Length: 389
Image 1 (spheres, rainbow, N blue to C red):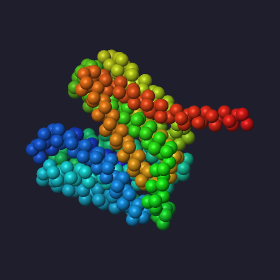
Image 2 (cartoon, rainbow, N blue to C red):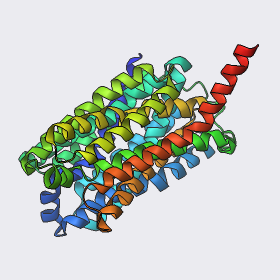
Image 3 (cartoon, rainbow, N blue to C red):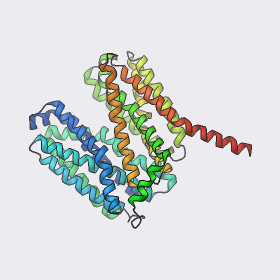
Image 4 (tube, rainbow, N blue to C red):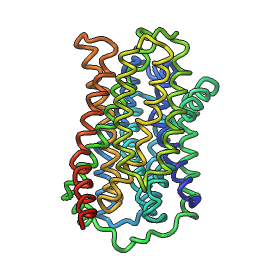
């Protein structure tokens, strides 16, 4: 795999660390800005809003200007570094909030353009594996990036963590300048051609499945802490370690899925959804059993978010893997994350208990599986026709 792919993975690692590191430095930020923990939590939501809404719009602007992917990524990283510098220097909550929206916009577009560059520099048969390396940066950010940012905050202050991300963004941009080849499509970048891809109903079907997979996972994951402490009986002090185990399972699952995503895209998604739904059901039914709950948590970690390489491979096979197609896919995944967490919380709010998000996850996994049935039926019919001939 080209070194450039790993640099793109480091880029996503840096941006995702910035997205979630706020969660680990809430005490410092509440004290710095004199606001509530809830308001600091909104800084994560504002970043996500920037990703979902602004990312595709910014990508459309770059396509309208016919900016080649390499140049677009360098511009985006420059914009990100400036916005992150504003966040690192923020003297008020309002300035920080605005900077978070701006970094979210740039981060989403960076993700889409990075995947488009991957599709350019590797063969079609290796796109899923390359995507797994880029997405691996996202996984490692939650396992390593956020804890490291928290440690830096505790020893040198929260601003140091933000400045570190600025330094990483500049480093990645510098390396990309020299290592990423000139875009093969430099003279043919077309907004019209990219927009035409969205007339493909199969692309929207692929997006829908991706949103349901991530929704099923985060309906449960968002409430792991209260489930594990109040139902399963783990001590609150053990939650970081349990989430660390879950994060490690994400990394392992991503590596395995990435290896086979190109050749076995649909089987991975079908069996992944079946196993995900079963693990969520087992977790809910046996939530008071610590051993079975831990086992279910690990399985969810192995098959939930790690289906990302297969999801990306499917989108890239369904449509031309341009920057806008990939950026919108990133937005859909973030919508799935937000909706899944919201719907999971509705069960608790309605009085169905802390296990209810797990059953919401099961329902979303079943819907995801149903969204694949037309394609499985078509494949079976094609196979039968081939045998008949």
